[in-house]
Amino acid sequence: MVTAMRFRRVAGGAGAGAARRPAGLLRLVCLAVLAWSVVGPAWADIVMTDAAGREVRLERPATRIVTNESLILLSLALIDPDPVARLAGWAAPQRVDRGIYDAFRRRFPAIDRIPVVGAVVPSNVSMEALLSVQPDLFVVRIWQPGWDDLARQLEAAGVPVLFLDGPSTATRSPADATAFSIELLGKAIGREEQAGAFAEFVRSRYRMVAERLAGTAERPKVLMDVHAGALCCYTPGRGNRITQDLQLAGGHNIGSDFVAGYDGQLSTEYVLGAEPDVYIGTGSPHLAAQGGLALGGGIDAASARASLRAVLGRNLLGELAAVREGRAFAVSHQLAISALSVLAFECFATWSHPDLFADLDPAETLAEINRRFLAVPVEGTFWIGLKDEAGGARP
Image (cartoon, rainbow, N blue to C red; front, top):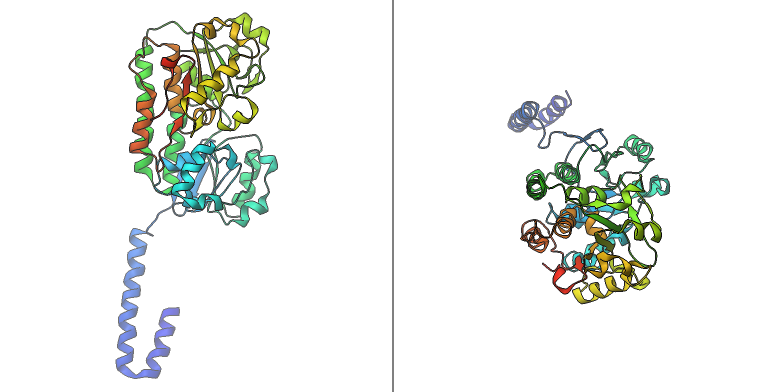
């Protein structure tokens, strides 16, 4: 009706020749409307069921993502050639390994201009700050109680919310959790093919380890010492993905016998009494300033090994047979909790069953990930052994 009225006004004031031109235009408009009604818009709604079991709908692929966890940078980099451009805001950018952050900055200087909004924990989030950067999607990479309430508020304001992690870790294995979250993210940004390729890569690495472990009853006792440093020993509990990865890799986290939840503290007396077969600490570059276990992007193997030796010289850890006999190792904490956790998983397998996985080299796996997937290759020392021949992590 509006188009017809406009046509009559033009035709009434310009004669027959002018009338024919709008009539032709009208026919084109009608054909376009008819075509749209048949095939729909260029992007039909994207419908997903996220890790919390919620249905999420997007009108088009997300281009302005805000997230509660800066480590989503690595997830995006696995499937998007310009991951920084999609981030309209993030929380706690310091959680990204500084060496990795610097590598991304050299390729994408705009990373320094990503607004810091929100928080890892929902109780610290400001709705006004989140909405100020005009997101078209809010992504929760780490679930915490309270995110559901915030999700309802954001969705009421017109911002869809996607949970890559849910309230229960028991419903999915670490392999499925990593693959599922990447596939969700890929669908949300219109990169399903790339996400599917990485998801299958991850599943294939876990399948290979599981097939070799079939029929192997031995499960070495492992002391997992996260953020290793001045205190002994903070450990992941039964509900922690690191514990689950270790179990799938053929080891047993002795801390999970004591800590039922996500993580907790072990006493030195408990550790010495348990007499673990293997010691594994997790560390980060920022721990160097605190005398802790420092490894990650931009750190050389000699420095990483020296920090491991320093940590093992405290809290009577040197009295453990695992340490005296050289079965002591370290892995990047960020690696273990990121979309690249398959590398930590492979390390756990080689350290728990060195004979069974003598030909498994996580460095080769990282090299393949760098070559096939990552927009910015990650380089540094992300795992190390106490013995010279046990470590090595540069791609």
